[in-house]
Image (cartoon, rainbow, N blue to C red):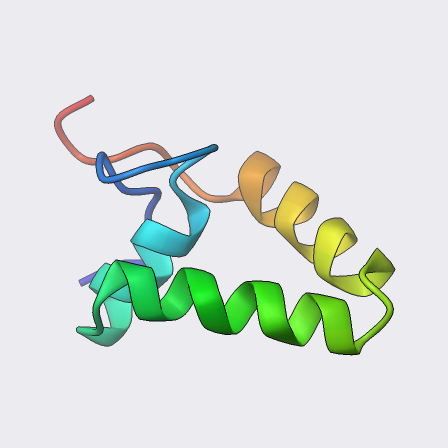
Length: 62
């Protein structure tokens, strides 16, 4: 299974796509992503999210 954006999205489907790829709960991935972003002074987390938003392909049947 390839890493793709998810239909289960709140903003862009990035965290949902990562969760589907890992087989984890999307809410857990979102919480972990926010915590890591805050603990890393937010900028690297926001930058990584924006890059993934642009780079990750859309869901297969979208």
